[in-house]
Length: 381
Image (tube, one colour):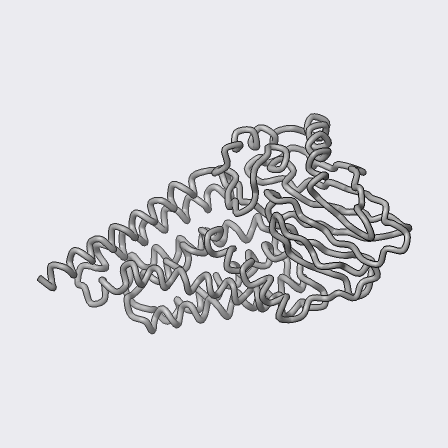
């Protein structure tokens, strides 16, 4: 009876893992419309406040509720959103200005009273690869009442995340808001700086979110490490090499000391997925060179992490704390992937003679196919 239960559990776990990989295959074949946060830089000069918003303006105009949204393909307005991405500045700008009239009523700025914001300019890049979201700019201006010493901003519900950065002062404010949240009072002359603990806690979920649920390529790479062997020691060697490597290039990339174009990094990340998966098919033990190869691939993944972090920006005065928070979030995401894989198949597979043939090799083939598709897509499509 006990053996029968174990066999059933093993088969169920195998089916769950393989079906999960199949689902990832389907998701990866769909056009990627990952939601990114708005970057809002503001400054106060000569009694006026100016906000420069870098945002995915098509998602706003389409009326997509970005709170908690991970991929715009999941939105009811995805068809409208896709059509807007094919419009040039002359065609889209009137729609942006019409949208802004209503949206600005919910974007509330207070400084010794309500600050009325108006659209100063709209900058929309030329139509390029419609598979990649455009970063447009919405410039806003408003008059600050005389004698005001601080301001607060309420970010509208449904607008997703925003990184708010104060410019032109010493000790500037930097914060991350979700839709419906309000900043604390921000001194116009500067002086409100995030504490190290605040920076760490603000950026930790950003790192975790980049792995789960948004980092499908990183998830598949980690699963490729997992499927080499059911023994813990090989997994620890691989994960350690990967962690040290991506931590190095994440830090160097965040500092701006190392910069490699995404057009090079992203295809190589896909190639790294193919490599570890294919090697799993031909060997079931840790070769002496695999940790070194994984270290090299980890350097590439770190550059990918740095590119994501660059979209958010790092607070100047708490750079190290925010960077550590982001990196710890990434590590927690990776450990969660490994833990879920272990709970799904690891417990049932330990010591099972048919694990490699029925789970590890089919799963590795699936991972290799997805990685190869991504490589071709990122190089040629």
